[in-house]
Each structure stands twice: as structure tokens, then as C-alpha cells.
Image (cartoon, rainbow, N blue to C red; front, side, top):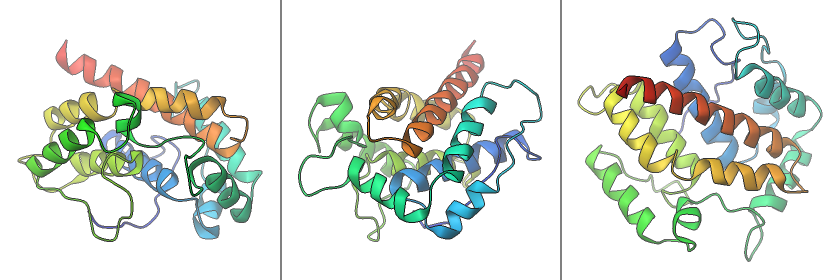
Length: 210
């Protein structure tokens, strides 16, 4: 899984739905994997905040996220990221599926994820320091399943299966923990936007199966 350039957008702003979905997953992957640098933060601050349809479900949490970015600088965001997710011992907030699904790190959910990724022809890059069940890695897989060129695996059915197993099953719980944490400011807004986006994705996949 290769690194990509930062992509920042208002959800659905001037883009077809699939491109917008892929870019949102890509943005979430970046923001959870590392704090934004000055360039990424500038782009997020400058992002449009109006959705094409006024009152859309994602509009308010997106506006809150952009507003939170405009209230912080890169060093402050780096400090917040380290306070929440870093440290030498137990982090304040875990970003790993295994923790939420099994109560422990590096457990069966990670093995299942690795198996599913292998079936898709994907593997963790040596440049990535985090295990595959880090939320940033999982969101990057979703971006690939939407925007990738391999039609054998990059299709709606594959997206739906991976989403149900590796996003819907635990990301809402992580978002609730993060949003409630007293040290979270920017990352509270990110958690609320992520939670809303997962709701929209869940509804979309449910409609496919109806």
C-alpha cells in the first residue's frame, strides 16, 4: 500500500460520489495515521464547507472538523495526537481493531484482517510502522477498494464485505471513546465526522442488500 498525496475536500463538493467517498477515506486514513503537517493543515482549513445539498447528514460534522482545524496550528495538533495516541506505555485512546473486538492487541481480528487483505492482493508496506488493524490502514484499504484499478476486487460487493467486517464492527466504538476524551479537541471533531461518515456508508451498503 503506497503513500498518497493529501486530499482534502468538502464531502461531495464537485465530485462524483465514488471519488468523494474514496477521498474521504484517504483523508481519514492520513489524519488518524499521523497529525497533519503545516501543508495538510492549510489545505484542510481552506476546504469548502458547504455540501451540494444543504442540510446533508455530513455537512454539520464536516463544518465542525474544518472549524477545529482553523483553531489549531500544526504543533498543537501534533501535541494533541501524541497525548491521545502516543506515549511509551498504554495510549489514552487505542486506534486498533483488535483492542475493540477482543480486548487485546495483536489478536484474532488482526489475523483475520491480514487474511482478508491477502485475498485482495494487499499487504502492509515496510514503510508503515503500525500493524494492519490500525484504523488508518483499514481506511486506506477502503479507499483502494473504491478507487483501485483491479476490477476483480475493487467493486461494491468487496467494499461491503470489508466494511462490515473491519469498519462497521468497531470504528463507531472507537469514535465514541475518542469524542468523549477530555484531551480531544480537533480529534473530537474528527471522531464525530468519522462516526457520521460510517453511518452514511452503512446506510448505503444496506440499500445495496435490500
